[in-house]
Length: 266
Image (tube, rainbow, N blue to C red; front, side, top):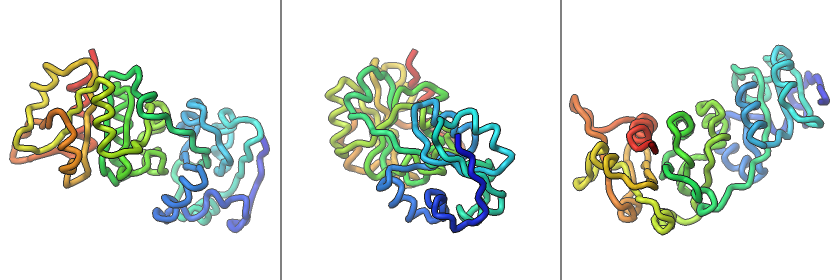
């Protein structure tokens, strides 16, 4: 493993890590260049364990030993003072290590869900923190896969990866090529498609869970607005979490955890 000490924030070899706070720039560049960022030794380790290949690693000296054990041979590791990391990235790298990772190819929807019983489908969720939290719940509670609509934030964006604690690497996922046509495809593959929504005809989650079939796709909508009318027109049933105290709904990440628990495969 080549370890390279750097002291110039303008070093062209650090181009993958530069100005990470410019969200619009990263959204444009990362998919185009086939990259995403993994932050922290544990997250980097999970990414590598999942078969993802690092292009380069940038870290402070104190994290070298932790990361060196998981980085494949031949990947350059750039070591720099913490101040230089902040200068290059544009923010304080609290976990002390970043890896630019090559994006894996995403599977076709039918291949993704071939052996799945419980999957989560995300429409229009634009907050990367919520996406990461939903993946963490999916991993912890036991959803088999996640499908993200074209309007959903990138699960491999740095913030999503960080909040998920690297579980975006262990939960199989793909991005739907057709929307809301992907919901019809899931139905054709044997799934009951349930949309979590404040609809007039929505059934209680407990009631739906009691009669849920062997294969269920749970569709979650955008923060605030929820599922679009187009998506609701393509679900088998609308489902609601009964609420109290004058509260009509939960944050989408919290709601997904509650619904996944209620619908977990037994």
